[in-house]
Image (cartoon, rainbow, N blue to C red; front, side, top):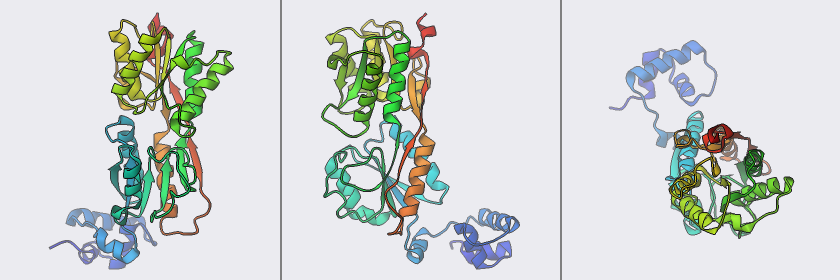
Length: 339
């Protein structure tokens, strides 16, 4: 038979109410009482009945995280950070992927599976252009991971995208690079991550008195290694460049392989900087310079915002948080490595 709160209370020598308070992290009890209850839970192997808890409280203790593609290393690391942040609040995370498809994103926001969760963390891609009809029919509170979506007044948590791109380009300029390419632009987009990183790239060039050359900017629809490789092949065929900012690390890793295959050494011939600081960047050859976002801050803030919204219609106006970024200079753009 399953272990019950009554069994734990008897083993710990406390009331059922006290055990319930310790399990939920609510009410008042001493550290010694918590220790006795925790020891009894561990000894008996007690597991809370989440379904019963949901019926009593009206909450399931589950949130969902919607990302475009879990194969993208950044989203895998984001999911890990979100799960860690959620666990600190005794929340489980249901991971969903949309493939960046607008219809799939709408189904995940409005469909039957929303009944399984209390709220949604949403990394938007297909719906990035928004629209006035977007908020209709979404039953759960949503926090957007990324830039605000036009027409949708919701909390959002993002990073300093433009500032990060500016810092990367300034670093390349300071290293003497004058023909700096940008990989990952989406020229049709006025909003979103790609638009902001392109704006930061352009601003850094303008600050240095260097004109914008559209031939050095490559549109990439899907930010993957293969797309980065193909975009770099187009750059190599089109002309000369001595620096490259890839709008994410996966594209930068694909780019470095193509540069090596084409006989261009990194960083001697082309210095490369990525964005996101995925774990693999530390172990690539050469190690990839990158812009590191404060991922734990993004995850913790997004989870906290969502908890504030769950079950509260009066949680106040939409909030915004922009996490910091840090340029990490490694071998792929280091003057020391070039020498």
